[in-house]
Image (cartoon, rainbow, N blue to C red; front, side):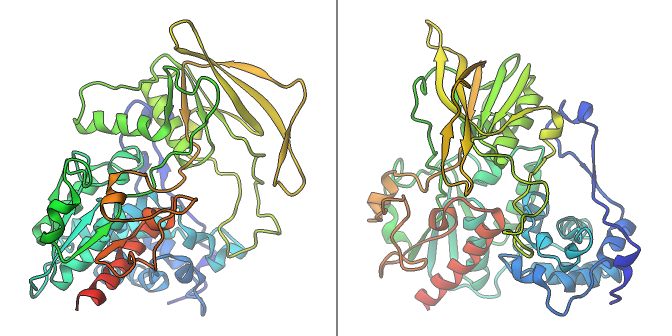
Length: 466
């Protein structure tokens, strides 16, 4: 593989549909590159002696190898290489923040390889050419495994264990399979046919899916414990970080994830009418992460009259700071596609109170500007900067603090520490047949880490059962 193409081929990313067009629907926003353009992008790979992209990928994707295959037009070979490490490249190729690209050696001197886009095109080409088949095991054993939670951790664990030969059943408390892939990520980032296409293959491979099954609630753990040889809990980290301030429970103040889920359920047909609608409302999003950005894109599509995003920290730098060297993920200002669709961003500002009217409906937010100290560890409110911002809909996108404290924990005798983290030895709960993985184990994280967790817990369960 040549290592000199990067000198004369520039990075080329997928273009986006015009803002005026895409905010009218919930379709994915990107225009695909041609095969020739993808091949050119793969040629930019320098085939490094030490591929930091590989080591920075949580699932260890063999990136230089599949780049080499694409460079030579060997799409089937590229898919075989990608399939060795990644259960769901159609997900990561769309919604992964690509820590591999941050660690690309080329990024020391130029823009990095478009690894995420190449990955997405490999899997889509594989589907197009009929290469993606159900992963049916050659033999079956008699042991049964229950997986609670159908996000990427639960799904990857299910696929790995089913392939070994276990009888796998996945339980989901919502009405459709997918977890936060289904109801937490807007369709303009991940259309749900992408999930359904993969689930069809998994079902054909023998994995059983059961929806509307809230283990610990409408199904007691004791009622199914005798049916399975092992349990894997992949219930996520959905305990919201709240804002315990005046007016928190006024009409018009919601958690961001409830808002995003509401819109996704409407699109999927699970509900007929939105419970939380930004149409003709002045919207304020509290929080500057990816979830906040998703709220911005959704609010603009719903027809908000204005969208403001509040962040309590100072704005990140636009280029790497010396304290954040390569190959670390750069802690720089992220202008997402949703930001480009219309938002006013305010930094170094905190919310002091939600103000309502006589009907307990939200009308404004009381804020104050803050000054951070030099090491960014604490701040002080700036005198005489308090203000009231008109607001009809406030969305709290301040992250999560760990797994939910619901009855499933008690029924499986699972203990939490003071930080809402589950007390466990690796993936296994004490010496029992209960295991945990994904965000439930490591806290709020990336989809690629969830896939890694699912693959690793599958290995642990297999060692336990053999």
